[in-house]
Image (cartoon, rainbow, N blue to C red; front, side, top):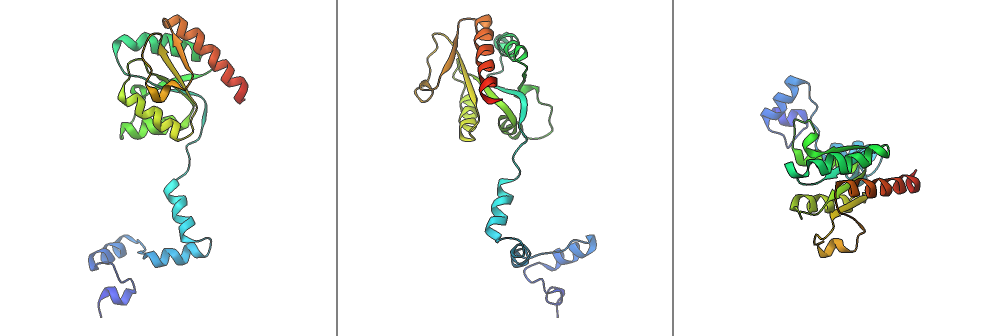
Length: 187
């Protein structure tokens, strides 16, 4: 009789069984999981919970900013968006400021979900920014769109209220006003 048959864990290779035994790992078949999950809830509910994972914890003071990373936009980020955030008690974070040792896309998507709201600068029609806006909308996240006056707004975003600004100071003033309004209606 083989180790596999002796163990009653058919479906595993001999090597898997021996390795598991060596490291004290209990091997379970899908049927074993169904049996264990059945004591508490159906395997469908059990697996759907696992697929969803736990939702990120909302950071009540965080604005995650979506915009291209370019030297000419630094003042826009620091003084326009950052200035408005500071005046209204928020903190800003942009993807290039995240210290991580993983996939940056995972970090971006996590922070979009974790932030209290998202501010997206759409003047340059950056495809990455548009992808991230779509993800935020899909997750039901609050998004404030900002665009320099005179810039063409794509059809799919035209129906959404934008903050149209003339310069960095104008952006700071208008965004601060919008953030105050957001805070009053959501606190």
